Length: 363
Image 1 (tube, one colour):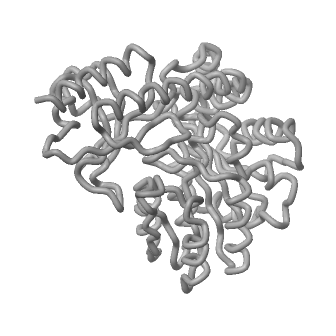
Image 2 (tube, rainbow, N blue to C red; image 1 turned 180 degrees about the horizontal axis):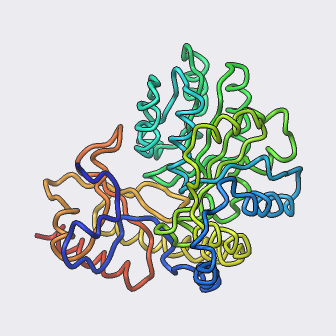
């Protein structure tokens, strides 16, 4: 079976730098690590399949920022990807709209449930930003027949651009008029400075009826560098949607150590905001370095960059032979050979990447 994602350090020899996964370059906060270790006393028991402590913790976390929140507004799972599949199985959408390019697991989850896909090709000249082509995007949604779901990454993967909460609000209104669910993947929103400007979640807590048909996915995986633990959640004010998802998912999908890590992560907001500021500065430097080597670099608000160069060189293969992994984006809908994605890492690691790319580009 072909490995479709980044992070395949297990299938390559002597990898010393992994730019193919978009996790926090500064690592897991020590208090999260210690919370996982301390949870070992519970490992001989089944975890709570309803994740009651974590749901309560999430309600308290969002409630501190305003709005009305309760434990029943959340569902937890084995990372956000687990919940994409749960949503598809529970809602059985007939036809969904996806943007191209976007994260491949959206399509795979929906196809498995028998859902038809309506693709909207984002304009490369506009940096693959739907907000930059608002009229065309909304017109496409309004004309699409039989649409029961719109699924959007915000920030989008692989290019990293985010759309404003005001723009998502307008899209939510259009979806409500069509009787469609709006699902928004905000897993990389943590890395965006002033992240509240781009998240629809706070609006859901203040205007429950208007946003009742909106389902937001989140995860602790990326921002707290815990992909091996797998902890994600989804938020929705329509509890009937969440009940269907609870009935459709496997029990115990969140392990005891993962729940302990997630509960500890809810107290690490200052670390997340510090990370967003630091990675924004590092991203700017890395983008300038890539541009200086002759690559076309697309604008991003997240902790990764999409870039392109079509000169016959397989940059992913070249770097892999030298112990560096980057993500080829040739298998993303709407992209092809010559597109690559790299995460933003520490300054010295970014410098090593640029040095190797310079060597490859100058052969």
